[in-house]
Image 1 (cartoon, one colour):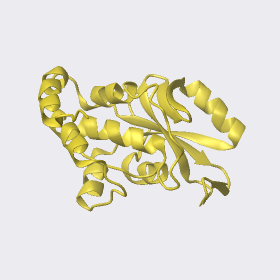
Image 2 (cartoon, rainbow, N blue to C red; image 1 turned 60 degrees about the vertical axis):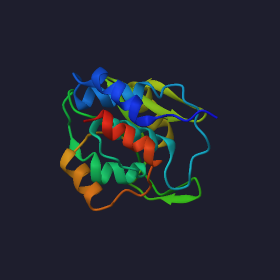
Image 3 (cartoon, rainbow, N blue to C red; image 1 turned 30 degrees about the vertical axis):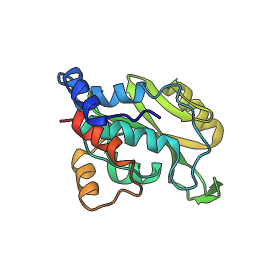
Length: 184
């Protein structure tokens, strides 16, 4: 079995991304996940939140692993973000409902998709991650009785959340070290 030397890979990638800002790195690392197979959604932290977390780590060097609701309430808190900011689209339930063996309360986010560019997101949907337009997401939200909220990253809140150990889950160590190194 071949093992990946993440630090050597990070050294090679660092020059590639040296001229890119955080928002551009976020969009890039979302885009490379397109087509990725999605397994069954974990009861507490689905693939959308994981994919957005991976892209955030790659863009900022700060790891965060939380469910969609926690990302919306604690990390993506900026309303009306500018087009040059890191953004995510959240499905917010209009009523209490049961999803994936848990109760989602009215007003909680149950799904998140990372914004890749103007009007385009990467949505992590079983069986794979796909590009969708925001118009498509609006239609799906209406059909399923959700609101769609676009939020911008609050960098200070991301840093605070990480300092306080608020991440619910951790990615595999060498993989995270790779992203932290690339983001330098």
